[in-house]
Structures are given as structure tokens and as C-alpha cells.
Amino acid sequence: MDIDVRPATGRFEDVATVVGTQRADAGACWCMSYRDSRVRNLDRPAYLRAECAERPGPGVLVYVDDEVAGWCSIAPRSTYRRLVHSRTIPDLDERDPWSAVCFVVRPGFRRQGLMHHLLAGAVAHAAASGAEVVEGYPVDVGPERVDVVAGYTGTVALFERAGFTRAAATTAHSGRRPRVLMRRELP
Image (cartoon, rainbow, N blue to C red; front, side):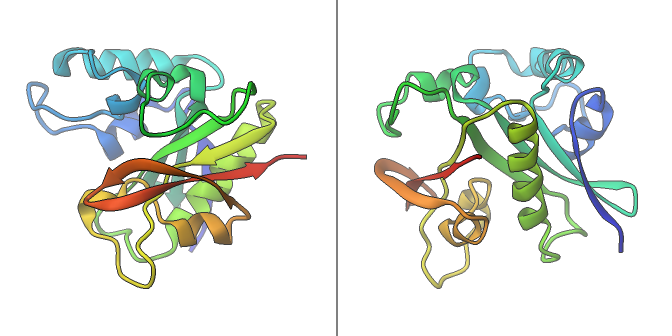
């Protein structure tokens, strides 16, 4: 099995395969919840297409044997409207960290450890784009399995295995699970 993580720049069709919908009129996040939830559902694909046309792009994709299998939204925190105005996730310092806010792995590719590859690829993409620090806001589930509702955030254990440390508590929740601000300083 060949696993490769690539920036989403120039790969809108693959992003759409992972986060899009079958019907153009169907409501979906299109990974806009953090970027700008004011964008109407029907306008979200065009917005994300424009994001994929510009560097550094809106995130990274993981491929298994050249088939797109998953997505991680990673970009500077300042580009996520929801984080800029957050009352539940603190802003720790004057730097503009890159934020990994969403993970999606397509059915048929789950339970193969792809989130680890996505997070590693997201950190590498942020570093290549000049990031000083990367943040994530995963759920703290302890030894329990994460449910689908909260799973898009990743887990504290996933981030810890990728070299992140607990940087701050938050008052945010996902699927009734507390979220933690995790950070990793880049060289």
C-alpha cells in the first residue's frame, strides 16, 4: 500500500471527492465551518475551488495507491473566521499559528492509520509554507473511542503521537467532549 500526502493546491476535484456532496443543492460543510460559515451552501464549492487555486491552499490530501482517501484542513489561524472570533479557543500569543481544524477519511479507508499520515503531512506542509507553530483543537476522549460527531477534530492522543503538547485548556466541546489546544513548535 503506497500512502502519499499532497497539498490541496490545484486538486479541487479530489477535495470535492472527500468533503463534497453528490448533489449540488445538498447542504454540506465543504470545510467552511471554520473558514467562513456565512458562505451559502450553494456557494461553498466555488469558494473552496478558489482556495485550491492559490498557494498555500486550504489543506492537504492523503492518497492510498493514488486514490484520494482523506483530507486535513490546515492554514494560518488568521484565515479561519471562526477561530479569529472564538470565545472558546484562546489565542495564545502574537504569532499566527497554522491550525489543523478538520480531518475527513473516506469510508473504505478508515481504520488504516491515515489520520496519522494526514497530520504529519499537514505539519510538513505548514513548515514548508513558513509556519513557526502548528495548533490543533482535538477532543480529549481518554481511552474511549471517538464518535463520528467529534472525530473530525482528531484526538489528543493523535496529536501527542505527532509531537504536539497540551498548550491550553479550552471551553470548546465537540460531541460533548472537551477540546484541548495542542501546539507543536517548528524548527
